[in-house]
Length: 489
Image 1 (cartoon, helix red, strand yellow):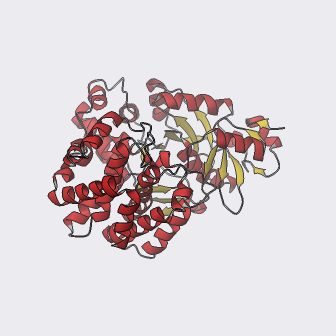
Image 2: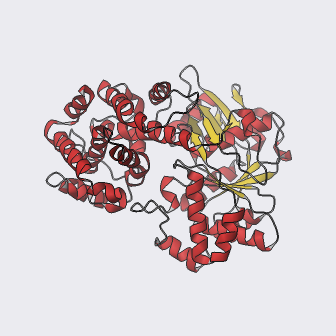
Image 3: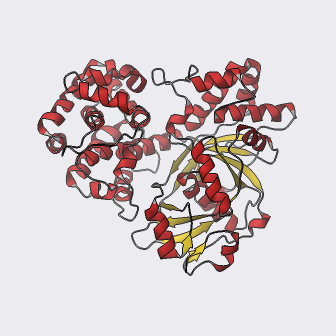
């Protein structure tokens, strides 16, 4: 008989389910995390759970926080089960489940409560997973989007912020005025040099509010870069049923993820940090190269298989990878055009990493979906694909496959698969993207002229010519023939 997950269940977990190997009553919070989604619970919470089980750093437990309506729903689910999460590792050789106990509270999803929690002197790290598009980056300049309405609101109303960055600044102001040291701001989002991006957004907003305060933030707050990696699909009824039927737990918010994790960080935590290196994290001087490797080969690879996968009718990522039309395209694009833009890393083989990524994508137990990979292309393409194309152009390297990837996204945005089935909207700018994609059948520039996505890249004549040629091929000869032509070289 399945049992509901909560603190009382820890003493009677079903056979085969591991639980916290420490007394949660002895944990004390020092990390406030904004954006308690699946990835955070499969990644940082797991590292801390392992560390706590070693008897280490019990004063670095997590308090959850959020700023969106979805965060409030997650808070309700997690508080009902005492902030416990069942994490299922989807290893093809055998699934395993563990109840993770490293988070001990979740503050109300209200600006006042979040600010008060950040201002608590016990909090030494504020970390975030707010998605790649949540940092107010201007696509045209790649700088701080100070004109965004949310930023303008927080600039004019520093005591009533809407954004997480406005809340961070309000809390930092409280701490400065009280003579307390600032917390470290740790971004755990998939962005190149995510610490630098976070610093630019926080200090940029601070400068709009109070230039002197911005100077204090710049001089006193640490923003370490980090690279995070663990494929973590969205939770659906499939995962909830698996946890119930296979592992005997009723968990309203379980997490299923691959068995692989990687975390590479700069060691820049003035107020202290957990000994994450004891449980597999890597501390290095230059995270940027590791970030680019992951963002371009893994995240860029996800984008590369997402749109042909959808157009050819695949639902699961592992099924797309089993299609030689798609796996051959991914391998060719990565070898020819993505890897050459990366600087060497001592002790790292990009060929081995490329093969590792292909194996991870092919894991049938993960059940990751093509619709998830297609989600939010207008934010993801500028992060994972377009910078590679810009660099290839500037260095005189091949960019034909990158132009094809963008053409595949455009063909997808036209709203139908190759078989004529309708594609459901999955981007906040879907209507505009669809109108542009349909117009691009006759005028490819109609898609590339979207400056919010492409910036100046859309005006580059060489890229525009390649994009137009590939898009015409997709419409005239189809996805399979176009991919095959590229693979043949």
